[in-house]
Length: 429
Image 1: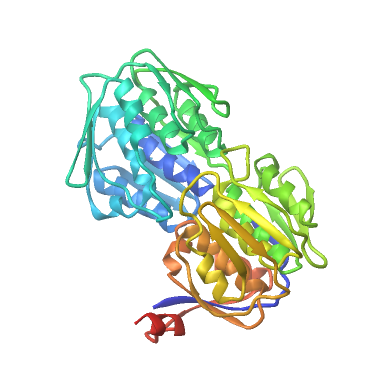
Image 2 (image 1 turned 30 degrees about the horizontal axis):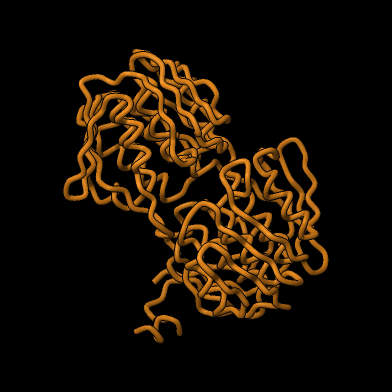
């Protein structure tokens, strides 16, 4: 059993470099399938989700050349079979992007139903609605989604809900379709823009990414390219919260400050000092944090992927805070783990009421999903005593070298391997 062990109460001080954006990387990698040449991708995060997607592409027949820890070359021209129906596909949510990419190249695709973190139902209905507008019919049978068209033709797609996944998947399918595709009520997140920029670097004609209307003029071919992925706003936000939780003084390098605006605004409301520079932010915290209310929303609102981390941070703030989840139905499943550390949180549907405590205490806990795992780390860094965090594999899906980065800032954190159950496991056995 792999666990994180954290002795809390250490201030974080120093500098770290933020890695490439996980949410952009796992969409850009499938997009390589659309290219007729070799794609060189830089600033790619070395995380398990990215490695899984690279392995899937390799299994499909793509030639993969790892140039360095953060750079990779992929030639997808040898891919001839538009199918991805293996266990690796079912283990990650972002594998759904294979649908759009394969459909865009071959006009047909068979992809296993994707998995990923479990914090509520995340249907693919908006993705499939977009494919239908482009002329593709679909079936779902025995856990495999199949989509097929005689040829893809541009059309007008209105998304019933703002969906990052659907926006990206429809872009992937539409860039080589005949004619113009318009996506209304499109997601505006930075990684949506990054995927559009990557496609354009290959010769696509995607306009309006970053607004709620995206227009795509289909092209016959896409070339190879060299592209650098944007920094990860959620990784940056996580370390900003960790610095604040420990009363630390941390400089985060390789960031795009505009992408952090909603996170920075809430931290400042809590009394955290945040100074912005060209490509870095300086975070300092002195004294106890102030209460505040947070509601997650699609970009440019406060990101849902930062909700668990901000909840952990507010668990030690002065006063009562309210966190409202405006995107997913069941994203507070981790709250029981924070309560094991002494947090006072009451959840009613999509709303959490947090009564800040003077201090949290170390305890055996588990990561229930990727961002919940980050929340456990933040709470453990601020807590008295020792915290053991299980289900580390969730954290490794989205954070590159998190142990090493935190150690460089002065955290007392390490990974251990043990066959012995924790108190938590023993109680549920």
